[in-house]
Amino acid sequence: MSPPGSPTGEYRSAKHEGTPMSMSTTPITILVTALGGEGGGVLAEWLVETATRAGHAVQSTSIPGVAQRTGATTYYVEVFPVPDSQLGVRRPVFSLNPVPGALDLLASSELLETVRQIGIGMATPERTHILTSTSRSLTVAEKMQLGDGRLAEADLLGIVRQMSREAEAFDMVATARDAGTVISAVLFGAIAASGVLPFERRTYEETIRGSERGADASLRGFAKAFEIVASLRGDRQAVRAAAEAAAEALAPPPDERKVAALAAFPADLHDILVLGCDRLEDYQDAGYAQLYLDRLVRVLAAERASGDAASRAYATTREVARFLALWMAFDDIVRVADLKSRASRIARVRREVKAGDADVVAIVDHFKPGAAEVASLLPGAWAERLMRWDRRRLARGQEAFAMPLKIRTHTVFGLLLLRVLAAMKGLRRRGGRFAEEQATIERWLAAVEAGARRDPGLGFELAACGRLVKGYGATNERGKANLLHVIDHLAIAATFDGEAARAEAIRSARSAALADEAGTAFDQALIRHGAPPRPLEAQPIRWVGARPGRPGVRADAREEAA
Image 1 (cartoon, one colour):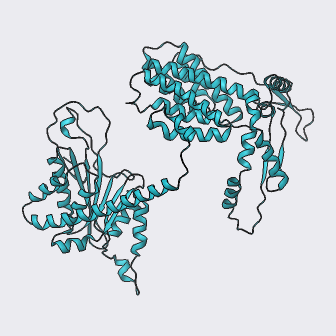
Image 2 (cartoon, one colour):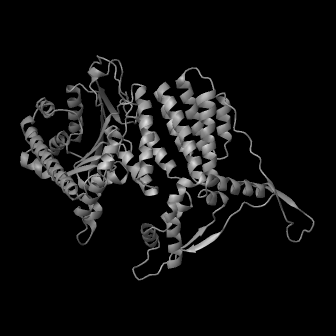
Image 3 (cartoon, helix red, strand yellow):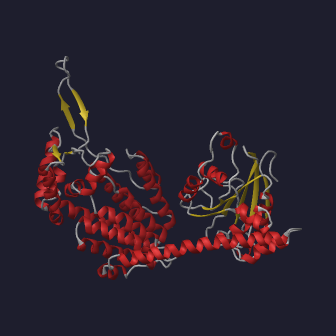
């Protein structure tokens, strides 16, 4: 029973018998808005009765209110998509009130009322199917205008289409009048034809026939609305199919090389693999993209060895594919020069400053490459010598080596300089950083493979640890160090009571590392799960001169090496 002052609620459910539910499902959420005297309450009762006839758990609530035109009432219905017979002893949990952004269907008898619900956030383009009448009941403010104060119907319909996943709009008042019935029967037919609820048409019609009176007229209105909505949906699907066929006909022929490369993977993974391959081919070359796929083949084989990869939608391989593509395309001075000198970037800057065609926009890019950036393009031995030299500078209390540059990208010389640097991507493979990154990537992948073979959850948590590697410079190095610490001390060395506990420890440590940049929470999580904290790193002391006006006073400052 609802507490006093709360929306009235009704819950009905057939007896629950059968096997327990094995999948996670959520109720189908429906919000019906109607004006006074339009039979909204009857419509809500029909929806509850139809769900009960079909053997589905259902709940409805109504919230009375007052509008400027006449009394407006909203009716909220939740229907569980799985029949009661498949739930066993389990019971669904319903909500009494609609949640903004969580509606599957918004059905409304008046156009402005529909837009009002959209305005308070009930509908979202990603989820909500909207059924609305194009008829209007004018507000007092519209009637008070000396001229034509009506809101433009086209603008209102534009909002409906923009804020819905699907939308069908027609004059429900005229349809009800032609059928000699009330608008609630028309709305009922529209809901039945929308396909949101998993019920057959005859189940809805049986509900109407069970009404005390006016069943024939209600069935006529139901049938008319059902045909209208079904026709609108059919036309839209035909247009969509024609557009897809035209796009397919105009699209370039598929890259046979990529089609063959993706053949080793399930179709569920092709979307993210295509994105990863395109990114790495743009970053380096086709061979680098093939290396990406070769690595994922190993991960997929390890995940399949656990026996339930398909039921988990290949979650581990998908997670690795996401982070591996980002990691393999690590930022360096070649990549930065390439991105900053692209025509798309220059066009974006012009859009951001709202420059016209005749306006001249000056773009000045500031760079400060240090020893690490220069060493990344040098062979291993040379790179190590340069880094040792820079570390000696830091040990003596000097600043890290850096070359501040200011390049005028809008000039011919500045743009040419960046393009020359961007063309040096071939030097990456010979550089010291490339070898270091690939070695670290292989350590991560080996841990993921070993974990996936032992336990699916463990493999997924290790795959998700790829998120720790982000940014550039000190942030990037710290992320890789945290990842290797997790692998060495939680995935390998530590002892746990089962692999599920190990996976939970890795998840907890990863969350702590991402939540606290200083690493204090990460160290605490490591200790809590029996792993040592990160080792302390020596920080050089840099001596700075006395402040002006205070001779003889010196200060020291600790400064992290870049």
